View 1: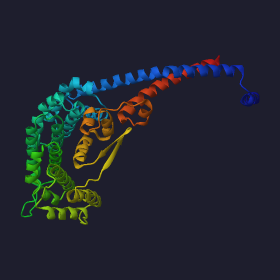
View 2: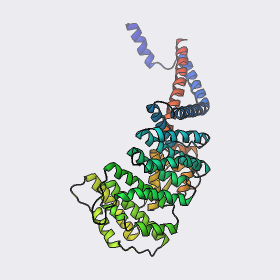
View 3: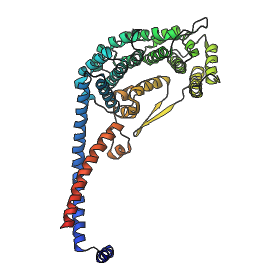
View 4: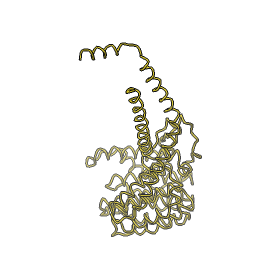
Length: 423
């Protein structure tokens, strides 16, 4: 034992032997060949990951018609995540009517949660396809289904809420006739006006879930305001500005905030059309907005009050001074300024569906870039590309594939070293 230990100690302090040098040389050669082939491996890895990803998408599409509700739900969620975090135009364009048929079936035959997922997927499908004949085809199939569920008092309330939001965004993207846009806005009006406090001050009896439906309808209505003609904005301002402030007295904080932001948006739009616009209920409205901006009601939750006060300070400035609190969105090497209520409502509507993938869509989705006037997607060099944060799904797929490739390469390399050592 002592003899082996002594040899080990000597080995630690001795300079490299010829054997050590040969191992080092082989190791160096191996690492050189690794580096040379790394570019090829990366290309192959990326291609394999892409094929694997598309195979998963095909499985999801097939699974949307499965007999099991749980399987259908998982498939819808999988497609939603993929469309929110990647640009899949070519893949989806070829299969758009198959996906549309699945969405229609899930909306008609599914239960609440499944209907909500299908409604969201319809929006993501339109966002992927952009404005044009393809998304118009999709929407022509789904619009009647959305409207039927939306106007059916006996339908699942969560499904109605989802359809209120999805109908708004799909109309913005895919409706080809402005008169149909106005008709859809009237559908929304027929819902949210039921939450108006009556002229005698009495409040309508509306449960929280129905209030949420009315809030979603109001936000979709506001979204479609952003594409109305100037003459129609005049008609709407005349008809709705005297009544919208009644929603500010609603017991639900989300409804109050939605109403405040919609009023600010409508003032912005009518002032663009008519800079001399004069509103009769000005003093009363400003009083209400100021009260909400400084609300100290003890019966309301602290977080609700904080959020409400912040929003209504901005709404009050918008109504009194025509002001907007700008916000800068950074994505990759670019930035975009949200500098108006129109932009804010549009940005919030898209972000509701793509979530954390919004920055990726701002970089790469031609349709969304067109909406926000960002020009065509920028060509980015590899250094800038590395600096960017890719979507979580892409990172996951790439890392998983790269990990496998690295493990294989290292195993091969280890095998070589073991062989040399033994030799």
